[in-house]
Length: 308
Image (cartoon, rainbow, N blue to C red; front, side, top):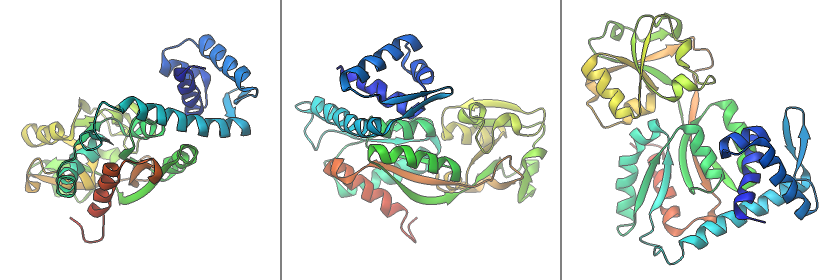
């Protein structure tokens, strides 16, 4: 029974589909099916029930996957022995682009105050990938956004892998424009009225159809430039008079450019409810290193009532 094969089981369980997992793992569906069948024969029971539209994890499979997740986490920790001391080993924190813009600097400042000898490593990726990598044990801590529906789906999966999901704050999406842009006179704008604009957007707005502001659903005859970071988006808005869609929290707390350069306009009549929340994702306390616990305390301090 090979470690990477156990990781394959986790991927199938996460996606609920052998074919989808095979694509993510760059394997053929037949190869992955044979590997899973072999594992199930070794275990002596089926991990998955095959359905016409995917797979469903059996009761025995649920218990086995919980143990496998712990095995994989311990294997990753074992690989680190002798490589770093506990104080010098960086604490990796996974952030979506918007949470990175608003939180990385204040978190770093707070962490260095609490742990002067500690090291922190921010890794930026799409929000959905933050949740996936916490479940698979690539990191112990992440911060991202979920809508009301998606957070419940994630909680159901995360609970099986001892991943905790903590609410941090509620948020909405706003249209970000320069103060001299024609739309700056408005306090709210309907997404259906956003016509003929030059948008600066993050990648997931053009790829995720379940996004609140999926780019193809915005107005008519718009042009879209995809940027990898909020910093570049802000500069595009400030220097090229483009418009963008960002979370209100990010607009308020991102320190890149002075706030008086911009106007945040509330989006209304979005294709789905314009409401989302920021969440802290982390492994259970008994699976956290001391410096990871310090980092989580720093996150909590930023979201205490009255905190900046």
